[in-house]
Amino acid sequence: MNVEKFVEIIGSDFYTGVPDSQLKALCNYMMHKYGIDPKHHIIAANEGNCVALAAGYYLATGKIPVVYMQNSGEGNIINPVASLLNDKVYAIPMIFIIGWRGEPGIHDEPQHIYQGEITIKLLEDMGIAVFIIGKDTTEDEVTKAMKEFQNALEKGKDVAFVIRKGGLTDAPAAEYENENRMLREEIIQHIIAVSGEDPIVSTTGKASRELFEARVANGQSHKYDFLTVGAMGHSSSIALGVAVNKPSQRIWCVDGDGAALMHMGAMAVIGANKPDNLIHVVINNGAHETVGGMPTVAKSIDLVKIALACGYPNAVGVDHFVDLDKALQVAKNRRELSFIEVKCAIGARDDLGRPTTTALENKINFMEYLTML
Image 1 (cartoon, rainbow, N blue to C red):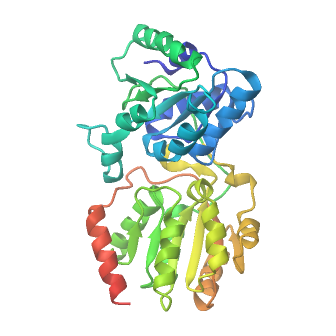
Image 2 (image 1 turned 60 degrees about the horizontal axis):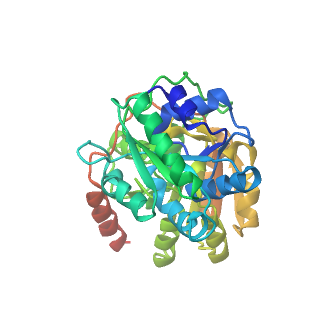
Image 3 (image 1 turned 180 degrees about the vertical axis):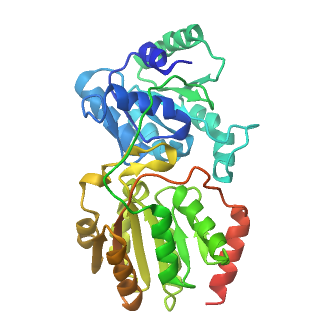
């Protein structure tokens, strides 16, 4: 259905969320209508963060907020929904808009399959009433559902619109860009050139896809890489777990700014443990590019200072290839935890593919390689 009409039917003036490709129409509409405006629209670090922001909005205004997200974010909302929003606790009502990746019967990537199967059940288990919107859902049907939802909201309960692929349409066109010039795919090629046969743990999204294709282009094995196709924000913790158990082997983490922000506490844990064989590279384009390009707050914060404050003994930022190559080589040659922030342009090849091996094959090949080190 038409996204503007959908927003009109909901009738809220505050939205917070984590962008999702299934909700691209809504995300672009929010950017067109509000941009980033703390009174009306905030892109948060993770979905639990969104719930807390929305709860604060409700406490201050008494009005119903909206939280939008991909269904992969349901895990991040379980605690605040159950222990904060629930009508047995504070009875804070809100509306969730959830992109349904991995819907049963619809082809999708492996990280979405199981999440898609349990999407509705998780919501129902949390006591959240659900209405599903697809390509053929009418305005009258959504209006009726919203009227029924009002009864639950008035009792301090939460409700959710679950959006099938193509369920929301007619968003204004949006272009997202920054002033950076280095392309992520080329940055990854430079990392590969320096890392050699060192294992790499890469973050979810286009970074892992580009790493996979870079290995193909170079005629290299995929055994060196663990592609974290799901679990956004956790690749650096996976890399820490590998590094502390392979202390004689250099381990690299190729991270993204949205992922690093989503679970930034991981940086404090890494900094406290100081594995001297870990190199943490954050490619920062200030955007949730994989799901459409909406901005993160990473453009306006200093990740290098954050890393240093978290206990990383070495942290640098680079914005062109000469400095990148120098920083990568220095990090490889030292025996100490290192952090490198790489400023990156927004954009990727239109024909960028996806890994042709399964997630299970990737795990097995990576683990077999680690046993040899």
